Length: 327
Image 1 (spheres, one colour):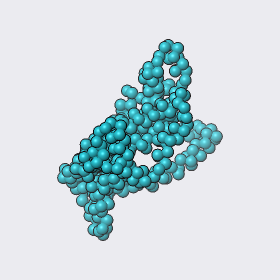
Image 2: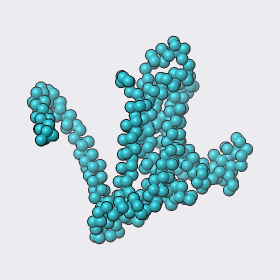
Image 3: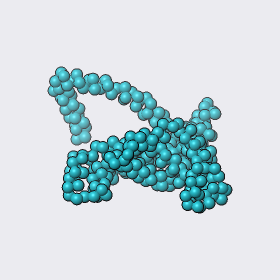
Image 4: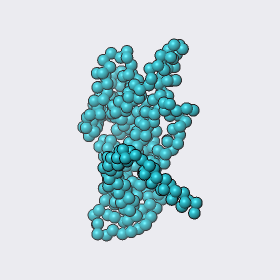
């Protein structure tokens, strides 16, 4: 009864607050609801409703080739996914191994380049900013075909540069096979990811330019060097931006699909090292036209991604600093 009474009292207080508002405030509030109504409708129609529908599909035996034979199977798809399909956990492991390699490198490179491009001592700073951002303007498929040539074992630029600079026999069949060697392919994919860090660089630049200059001036007066200012001022002040890029990078890597699909055919070559989770999902949902099982796979990745994201937000107060907060 206490819970019900609390709910009733909360509703009454909301009505009172609305009645106590001045006509101007009520007018502004109504227009606020009108302005966000399109977003609410879009969220309900294009996000929430498809999510609910996909969960319903996960409880069905639904073959696209036989839409008339839809059958309710309950948790059978989920049981098959969790206990019978060995490729689910294998592809999940491939995805997380690549994320552990690629994500830290991508975050570090984007932040390091942003710090460099934010330096007042860099000659041609605006030109370099444009050049580092330009790769993001290239269509993804076109850029992947470019990288297929760059990483080619016999004719690729990367192997030729390595052989010229170090003398290591990188060119040829016995050279560095970036797209054919399971021990090198994640590094090759990471190169491709670094090539497209222009968006992250821009976001980091915005964060760096929002750091109060008086902090640097005070640190210089106290005799702090460049590294000390970087470690004690710059990095703590841009941790919200780093956290934002971390979340975006994680979500992107959990949905990693296009690169292995285009460069390695989406069949797991070589030795299953490119059988990412989204590849497994795509093969089941659209290759085999099993939409019921595909919906269950999609929901599993959603749950895993949500758990990791919540965990990151739980740990954020220990290392993410926001201006104005006290600790």
